[in-house]
Length: 126
Image 1 (cartoon, rainbow, N blue to C red):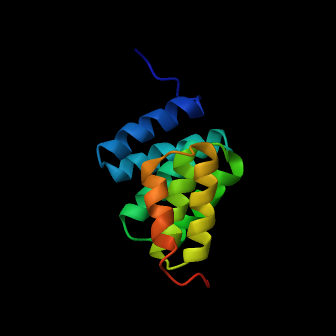
Image 2: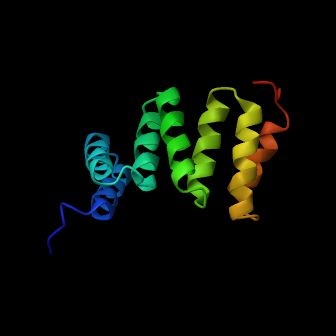
């Protein structure tokens, strides 16, 4: 089986596999290649954001999750991940808003409900 090197979807799928295997260098490489072909590839932004999050680079992670939700606001993980980064940055009000957006997509997500609940016990000013 061959991978079409001109398909951003194929490259993002490969990047997701590398991300899941914690091969972060290749995850970013394939995601960036996908973005060269399709600057609106929300999955590529999500993967790059995840890599930056895992590396502790929360500002760059947030930039990529912001792009992911802008391009494709219908994905639970985009909003949950954005909220997670905002929480780490102590932007609790923003995190709360992102978790609420995630709940609009999946109202009974126990993970998102728990994360949203945690924001209620923290200062809401950003």
